[in-house]
Image 1 (cartoon, rainbow, N blue to C red):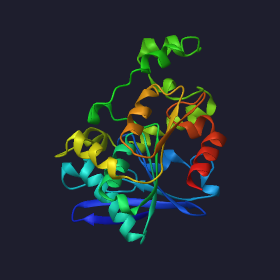
Image 2 (tube, one colour; image 1 turned 120 degrees about the vertical axis):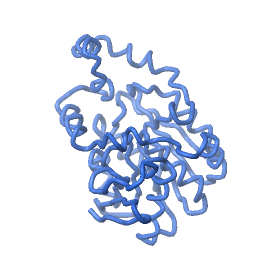
Image 3 (tube, one colour; image 1 turned 120 degrees about the horizontal axis):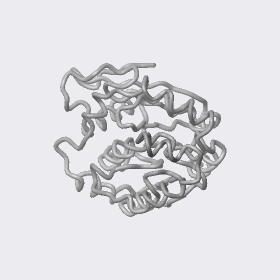
Image 4 (cartoon, rainbow, N blue to C red; image 1 turned 90 degrees about the horizontal axis):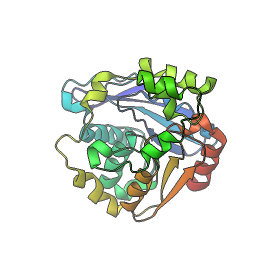
Length: 262
């Protein structure tokens, strides 16, 4: 893992995985190290994944000021990595809360962007988006053997996976070590407004893809709301997958992203 000083007191990390054209990958959480992205369902076989550790997560030291966890500093960190690697144009992916960081960087650098992928994006608290179908998605899991216990103990973890199997459990088990609670609690718009993020997306004149999962507990309507901000966005909803699609159906994720990025 390489560590960069973005500016005095603010650090970010990145590591390279795979071979092929680069894809800059911004993790979510918020506040989770990029390790949970793994190889994005085998996408590293055809792409060099640039896996970012945002300030205070994974290998990146905590920022000296609390605003180092906020979106302006996170987008600044992405820009520092882009500049350090000498990237002229960028294929960019943001997962979950990382979609906001990716969107803010894209809005500020539309001429540097080649493709934008928003993978199971969030944004309700920051952008005022609505999770209109989230309850229906959650209720569709009532027949699952884990459902009653999850409701009784208020454990939402199984809902985030299309199948609560051994692979999903192993992926979920990594969260405690991968998450920085300081980064989670510090995440937010900072001095920005929601309009500062979304208005700039109207100038992102490149192909964009918003990928959702039919079993994502955030629902799928939020994907269409994100797509409405972008002039050239398509929405793909992968069947049977949750908030971490590459865990549930790696082949579908790889095929979808390979096709879009080619």
